[in-house]
Image (cartoon, rainbow, N blue to C red; front, side):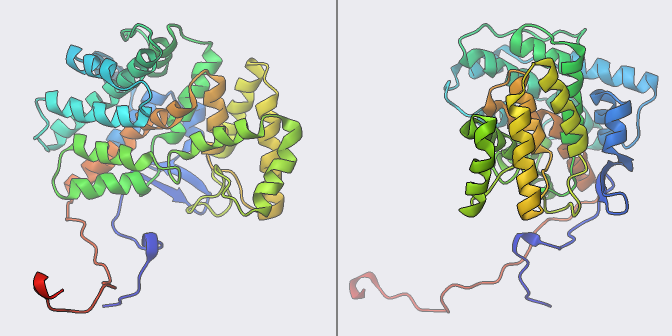
Length: 374
């Protein structure tokens, strides 16, 4: 047995999946074989959520039933809403969402049932209720009344309605829908592998998703979209962008929103999200962030040959939609629940406990000296 250490499991193939893949031949992320760009162009988010969870795109009847089930599961209990109101106003929304999913497990009658049908039902319930919890906290921490979900609204429309009390233009909703499609799934990333590791012990789906949320919070994973916005706010003006990014590179600072371990020729999701970011910028009559975006991107490519990942255009897009910066990663969560759930069910279907080895580098064997002799 080789004792070569692969830090971060770099290059190690630990299992197989049919949920998603970055196909090198087309340099594109694919869900169940479909390129994400094509899905963004031709599908609404609910269709893609169905695809990720079920393996195939839905027909009209299947989509109708899926939408009906998602909308009927949106309501949160009075107890969970009360708990959300009591949560510290300065709490990070990621911690609130993580806690909310744990609370859902306490109320779900099928928490202990890991059968395929029960897991699918639970996955849809978590998918339906999590954005409700997030929107409730957004309102609560601002001292505003929590808005109830509306069954007649789409997944994205309802989230805007619950956050802001109104649904924006179709163009804004479509841009949000596209961001959710692009964030829905991404193979064996850190949070997904966390979910699968938890699942491998035959834990439940609520526990696995709770762990995945904790993993996603980090700035080296989902938290990058927040860091992008913090960077743009530090730059402040387009006139300062060129000097700021060059100084950052000279100082060898980490520039968030750039580079990706999987893509060799740039993140295939970026062109689509960038297009919708520019559309949202025009709708909002905003030139500042679009200019900063272009300058930083150009310098990073020219000096480092490093291209943006999807977090780079998504951060300022969510900002222009009116979301607080610390809500960006939780929005990622409400989409990625679909991908996590698909992997959790896939893990259950052919499970083996994930238990890697480690190379011990501590002291050699030694004997304990009694306390009075030390």
